[in-house]
Length: 186
Image (cartoon, rainbow, N blue to C red; front, side, top):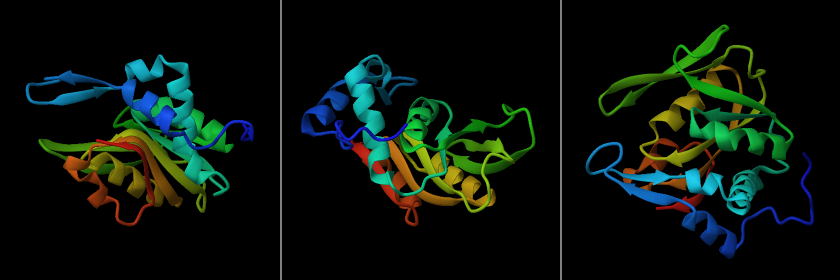
């Protein structure tokens, strides 16, 4: 979908305030001591959702993006419309065992063990320019795994775009070699 020049690419201050106001805090979820950032109200607010998609895509317009990789699960919600906005294909990066064909995988460390993300082996053409999209950058483990996964597939990571960065968790430190774009930092 080409960019409509009548619609601004970058959310203005009022739109960023709307986006932020559309995210609710849920204390002690999924366990005591965690403050969960719930994006479901944002998804139900058309203006906030549209501003979020535009904002995630804006820095990468004109960058020749071939594919947008969205991380399971909430990265799918934003990744697919960002891909449409950039005229690119969408590649879901899934948890292990969810894809039905030949895969490329990348393990990453969790606080309590390891996990793996996968893409179809034929999803990214070698030499493709790829944007990774997710809802939140926390510790950076999943994001780093996605970057390495794209590189294993022969793609070039042009950037990583997220709705929200939880800055206290220092995930940005795992992305020193990637252009990182965040709409909100909390």
